Structure formats: structure tokens, C-alpha cells
Amino acid sequence: MTGRSSAPHHAADTEGRVYLPAEHKKPLRKEGIAARDALGPEVRADWSARICANIARLKAFETARTVLIYRSVRGEVQLARLDEEARRRGKTVAYPFCRPDGFMDALVPEDQTAFRRGAFGIEEPDPARSRRLDPVEVDFIVCPCTRFDGEGGRLGMGGGYYDRFLKRTKGFAVIAGFSVQQAESFPHRPRDVRIPVTVTEKEIIMSQQTKWSEQSAAAFARAVASKTSVPGGGGASSLAGALAAALGSMVGVYTMGKPRYADVEEDIQALTRQADTLREEFLECIEADAAAFEPLSRAYSIPKDDPDRDAVLERCLLDAAAVPMRIAKLAVETAGVLHEFGRKGSKLMISDAATGAAIVEGVLKGAVINVRVNTRLMKDREAAAALDAEAEALLEAGRAEASLAYAEVFEKLAN
Image (cartoon, rainbow, N blue to C red; front, side, top):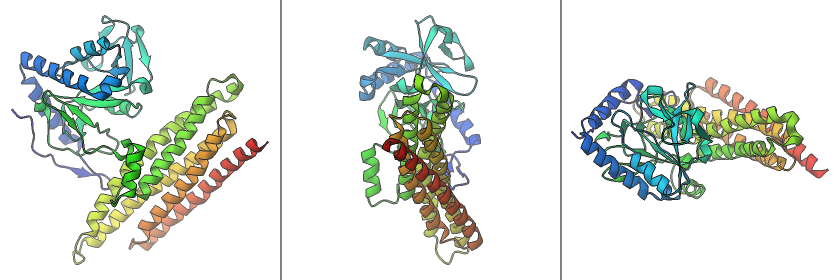
């Protein structure tokens, strides 16, 4: 049994991005589970040991101080040997704990007896006998799967726990899967986290489709400078917006807990959470902007005598304008958050709020011009005019907020 399935049918969302509908994920999961269940106990144990050895060879595992692995269930890759190897090397080993709210925590059990049967029949650490790690403390994550495509795509059981966790950590993630679980490529939505490395008993597969938002600063800059269509102005604006929001978060984390700012502690905590959310949304817009360009590019290649060309092109232009419009809205919200950080944050850090405000003004201008570059080509001039008016209103409001945020901090620091 090869484990490979025929290519699934795909659909497109409102922004023209191709994805795998939920009804087609279920049979893929069943095929992957059946493929791994067909392995005998001895083969499963042998292949699991090989996968553990392959993971242990990775540089990211070697340098990690804290690793998150799982206890296998229902035929998953067994990671007991990786647990032993990590401990032998002096690493902290954490395990996932699935919360009722749909999020996952990384817990370090006090010993090997501190486990219980939890959600979905999975052995998980007992919270009362475990130490919780902040997601940013986790350096390396091993993700289980029912299917993988070798291009960063992964199907779990459908709960989304790992996707949500991976968006909150800076750790290096890998998929652990048996070779028989590999499927043909299956497109995912931009919110799905693509994982750069898959480890099987045969090989270590490096994905060629890493998210733009996960590239190094140098790689992203080189891509912008190269003769490629994406990332371009929209992606660059999104990245700059994420940095502006991140500067706000930095002000927050350096202000929280300081006795001098106790009267605004709750406000600072709320602002920091808001800035963290904005940062993630900006990063998602990098992928959305790149994804929106592809159908627009295809539409331009439709023969001019095709009767459907104008309708298809109009829809693609509308979808392409939607992403920078979203960036503009995020920029206005970010300007407001930075303004509040400048007013309430530690005086030692408010220059970072002002820097963020200066950046976000540029983000707003970049977003609005990218709305305009699409609306100018639309046939429906009434719809184009409405979008232009909305964008200009955002520009006016956001520029005023960002300029005031910068000016107030400048004045504070001048005195």
C-alpha cells in the first residue's frame, strides 16, 4: 500500500485562493489512518525508531533547549526514543495539553507518572503536576499527522490545536509521519500553518513552499528586490505593519509589572494583546496578498476575445483590492494602539511607540496606493469610486492618528 491518494478536488475562497474543502479532508484522513494502521507492530516500532533518529540529526533539534513532543495514539509515530534522547542531551521535554477553549498548552510533567488520559483519548500531562511553558519558550515542536504532502501541508485530526499553537511560538516545527501517509499536494487556506520539514523513516523532506512571512529578513528583502511578482508593495506593507505592531508589543512587555505604571497595568495588558493580534493579522496579509495576485495574473492571460474575460478580471481586481484595504484598516487600528502606548507606556520605551507610528503611516500610504492600482482598472466605476472613497477615509484618519502619536512622544521627550 503506497498511501498516496488521487488528487482531491479543490475550491476557492472569496479572495480567489485555492484550498481543500473540509468534506475532502475527511477521506484523506481516513486513508492516512488506514495506511499507518496497516503497519504491523514490529514495522511501526522500527520505523518510529528511524524517524526519531532522523529528527535527532536535525540542527534545529540539536540546538533546541526545550522540545515539545507527544505520546502516540492510534498508530501515530512513537516518540519514546526521542524523549529519551532529548533528556540524555539535557533538554526540557514538554507535552501538549488540549484545553476546552480550542488552544493547546505545552506542559512539562514533573515525572513520567504525571500523565492522564485526556481529550480524544490522548495521554497528556496532568496540569496539577506539570509546569506550563509560554509558547515562546518552546524551541522545537514535533507535530503528528494523519496525512502530509511533503510540501509543508499537514492534516491532523481537524481540531486545529497545533495550528493555533504554532502561530504563538517561534519554535522550529517538523511533521513526523510514516512514508505510507504521504498524499498528493493539497492546498490549504492561508491561516493553516505550513511546516517546513517532514521526517519519515526514509528521509527528511524539506518543503519548497515556506510562507513568505516565515522567511528571514534577508531572504524576504532579496525576494522583493528580485524580478518576481511577489512579494511586492502589498507584502512589504504588511511586513512593515507587523513590525509596527511588534514595537507596540515591546512597549507593553517592558511596561507591564512596573510599580510606577500600576494604575495603567490593565490597559497596557489589553493593548499588548491587541498589538499581538494585529501583528499576526499583518503577517497573514503577506500570504493573502501573494495569493490574490495569482488569479489576477491568470485573468490577464485570458484571450481578449473570450466573452468571460471582463467578468473574471473584474472579480479578480475586486479581490486583489480587498487585501490592501484590509491592510489599511489594520494600519488605522495599529496607529490607535501605538498612540495609547505613547501615552501610557514606560517613558523609557515610548520612542518605540513613536517609531511604530511613523512606520504605520507609511504602511497606510502603501496600502491605499495598492487599492488604487486595482480600482483604476475596474469597469464598474461606481464600485471603484466607493472603494477609493473608503480607502481615502482610512488614509485621512490613520495619518492623523499616527502623526499625533508621533508628535506627542516627540514633545514628551523634548521636555
